[in-house]
Structures are given as structure tokens and as C-alpha cells.
Image 1: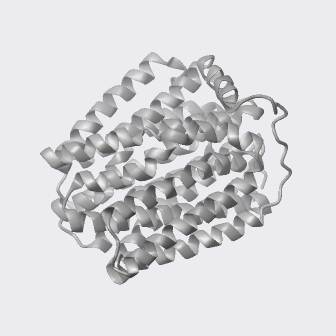
Image 2: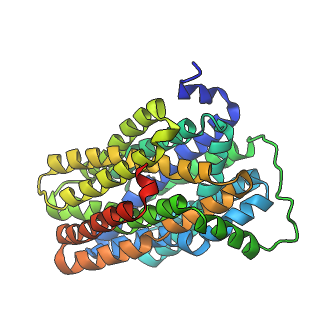
Image 3: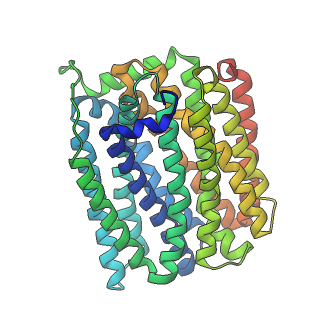
Length: 400
């Protein structure tokens, strides 16, 4: 039983933090797909679809570096409650506007930005707690389980988003999401753990941030993790914003089937993350991370070349296997390489790297409007593969 990562669920604290991630991320993906379908139906612009995702991701780049020092000074439970409450409010506003048929694209952009800001607060705080509640010996398994859960949500959320949008419309999707975010508020309020604030009360946020960045500069391995994260978020992950466009224009399928297409990568990533959780060893962290990143990026490249719906699903499923290794080891490497009192800061830096996605989203959306979604994906994924291979060659610590 000691080697079974599922044993972590016997901890009430781990279970609650895991539940927050499961519910919150499912709704995040549900909202993303429903909004993507709605915006493309109304505007027929791939760039505007991408801009909606940019609005959600941009806060990571703007505020992610400040969350780490912030989380080391304030009770993480209160931060999780605050984030979930704000998400409940923002999605409720969208639900009301959609129900009254008053919703405009700019309404969605503003409130999605608010929601993205809340997720910027949630991600490093919650993922740090997952690592701490797992313990040092089980940290890799705990993060892998949380990644497996994230990948379930990337499978379940888009599917629910497509089905809900098809049956209940945009307002139905937002109502379900608002209720779910309120449940997250209740779970966050029930968290119980000892909070020990950083004993450097006189230090400014900028000084704490500078200390965190100095730790990064002294570790080529951390630099490599952050660079690979930037590459995938700029050249790989933005593909998800093109799924509604591919579904409508290339595969010519209905919203429910677009939801299944969007869920395919999450399904593969779920299977992969479970395998990683059960077999991972600390000595494998780097190789699993880099092989996973290469597999995922290759999948996006091959996706750009196919016209068959079923083939697209299979390719995304295989890309998801790679995503599992990359996603689980990304946080694990940062948390294991960071001193305990700097984990939130370095997770905040990771949030900034993830927050680079708007650059790729804008480029992909613009290229898709000019050349079409498939050519745009071919260009961006080719650049990503080259940059990824170059980084792995230049930083040998990533291959060990």
C-alpha cells in the first residue's frame, strides 16, 4: 500500500485540495469550449476565438510572478476562498447576461479576464498545497495524481461544454459553472491546515521575487524547465483555441462532436498521468518531462496535416499521453528543486511562463484568419518542435 499513490486520498486535506482542482478545472474547460463555439458562431473569426482564450491566460503573465510572494505572506486557505468566490461572481454575471440575451463579446472578454485572474491565484497556491500534503517522498506521485485529475477535467469539461451548449445554450453552460464554482467556495472554506507565514515581514514583494529569480539563475535545470514550459505554451497549447474552428470548418461536425474532439487529448493525458503516478521514480523526472513535451508537440504537428475527424481524435489522444509526462513533471521538478520557503515564489515564476500563452494564441489566431487553421497549426508547431529540440540539446540537465 505504501507504493500506491491512491493512498494519498486517505488524507482529508489532500482530498479537499484535489476536489477543488477537479471541479474548478472541469468548469474552466467547459466555459472555454462553450465560449469558443459561441464566439465563432457569432463572428466567424478564428482570431476572436483566440482572443477569448488570451483574455483568460493573460493574467498569468501579468500577475503570476506576484502570486508566489503573496502566497507566502497570507493564509493560502483565504486565497483559495477569495479566488473561488470571485469566479462564482464572474460566471454568474455571464449566466445572467446570456439568459437575458444581453451578452456581447466584450462582456465575455472582460469577465473571462476576471476569471483568469482568479485562476492565476488558484494554480500556484493549490498546486503547492498538493505537493505539501503529499509529503516529500510522495510528491511526484501526488502531483501526478493531480495532473491525472486535471487531464480528466480536460476530457470531461469540453465534452460537457459541447453537450451543454448544444442542449441548453450558452446560459445553461454558465449556470452549471456558477453553481460548481460556489461548491468550490464551500470546499475551500472547509480546509484545515497549519499556516506558517514567511518570517521576513520587512521584505517587499519585489525583494522576495528577486530572491526567487536568483534561485532560478543558479539552476540550469530550473531554467530548462521554464524555457520548455514557455515553448509549449507559446507553440503547442494554443491549438486548443482552434478546436472549434477545426470542428466547424475542417471536420464539419456539431457542438457535441467538437466537445469529444476537444476531450480526446485529455483522455490520453489521463491514461498517461495514471501510468506516471504508479511507476514514476525521482531519477526519471527529467526524461519523462522532455519526452512528454516532444510527444505532445509532435502530435500537434501531425494534427495540422489531417482532414479526418477520427484520425484527429486518435492523434490528440496520443498527444495527451505526452502531455501527461510533461504536465506532471513540470510542477514536480519546480517543487523538488526549490527550497521549501521559496516554493510558492518559484511556482509563481512557472505561472508567468504558462502565462506566455497569449503570445502564441494571438499569433495562431492571426495566422488562422489569414491562412486557415491547419496551415497556422503547421507553422506554429514546427517552430515549437525546433525550439524544443534546440533547448534539450543546449541544456544537458534536461536529458539526465
